[in-house]
Amino acid sequence: MCFSFSKISQVHNWNWDGERIVHESIVPSSRPPVGHSKGNYDIDVREFLVNERNVIMRRTLEKDIRKFISKLPHASWELFCSRDSGSFDFRANIISEFVSKEIQYIPTNGLDPWQFPEETLSLKSGDCEDRALLIASLLLASGISSFNVRVALGKFRTWTKGKRHDFDHVWVMYKTEVGYWQVIEPAHAKKIQKRTEIKKDLPDKAEYFPLYLFNDVHLWQAQQPSAYKKKISEDLKRDWSSLHPEFAGWVHKSLLNKALSADICPPWVLNSLNRHFTSVLWQKNLTIDDVDLPGSYDPRDHFDNGYITDGWDLVKDRLAQFEKESLKNLNAFHLAAHAIADFYAHTSYGHFGFVSNGNLQLFDPDNPDSNLPKKPDYSSGTAFDFQKFSRNTSLNKGTAVDAVKYWQGKIISGRYAQKGDSHGVAEAITFIPPDLLKKKDFPSRGLLPHHNEIAVDEDTRSKEHVLYTNGNTYSEQYQLRYDAAARHIREAFKKHWKP
Image 1 (cartoon, rainbow, N blue to C red):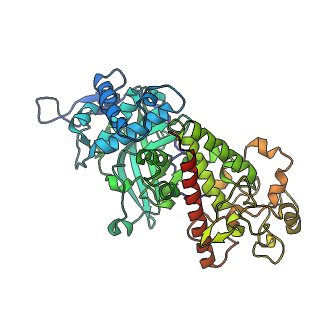
Image 2: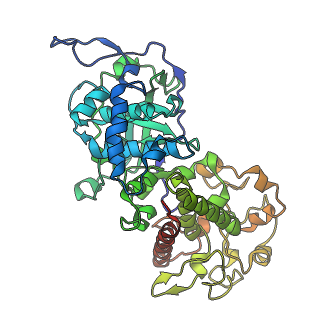
Image 3: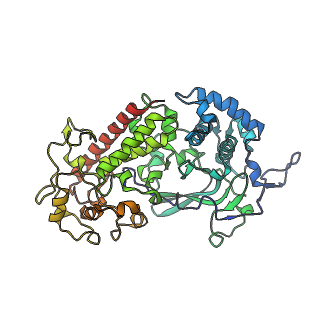
């Protein structure tokens, strides 16, 4: 439903708190006891994580990470150490950036032993599980509660042309200050450039598939007992380093990355914003934004259901928050940027807005008619004829003529997630907040075309799209809207970034 529609499944459907505690949290060490060349010994898996009591972790934070922060434009050691709102997410972003930049990824083959975090710091290298254990340990050592940190042991699963591929993998889950579980991918080693030898076998969809979760307190089973019956000791004998870092490249080709170039946005800030996305191979169709989770849906965040003025009011509020506390509240800008993109993708402004020199002029929410050559017209015989589209008759029995009478002259967007009007699984499990449903004007939103019939949020036209039946026209609209959204996001950042 946004410019970057996702085919990553299950990322946010798993219970990242864990299904049940595994009381026997003992795993094979994968290395022989000191002084011996064969055998292994039992170890408590929780021992691979260390917390704020560990002197090595404290020294790393106070010396190495403090020095690292000093080299990041506008980053603040004081914020990193504070307990202000936004400081915990800031710590998570800085620690992820530190490990990504300072700890070299070296893939290993075979049943390699896990490194303790202190070993990884000393060697300044490690594979995916070593980097994951270090990230989680530094998160805990920085004062982030272990309730908000999990190391996930499982698989990275992809489907290519219907064929499934499983890669053993270890990653970190961090619960943000607004309560979302966010993937911190230890394989995010560097910005990935497209390479033809990878591109030809791009997966159609992908999934993070956790088997176990642990922190410094507990080990949990991530699957229901009936779904997965192997012993953890059997799982941990696997090679947990078979996922190459380039496979899970985190820099997705998105509006944020187009809009926020290094000349206006410090790279570490853009990296922090990118962590709101779970992304595979820089592909738009394999990128999911945490704003798009069904459980957190508010149509005003997406300019759905005709909420145009309300949507811009939210954008203005969030940009004001971002301007007031930029370093503490990158999430506010992320939400605003997402909404700005959705405005251009979802609404009729792209159809009616003024185009000059091949560019759609930016919408001005304070003067909404300024770049409209004429009022939007949805009457019979026009290019945006309401008779082309469906209506939600379970919400409003009105005709296309009634729809024109109500919405004529206004910028509109498509209806979405209205009761009795589902167009797919994602929409069926998405619910509009009750306070909006109770308002007197809500039934009028059933007269709107469906989101899928008028939105231009994918680079190829879907079968449900009705507004632009000509493929070339659709492509032109997509490019106009995408470019305008990127310019608007860029201007918003320049105006409100006050580090």
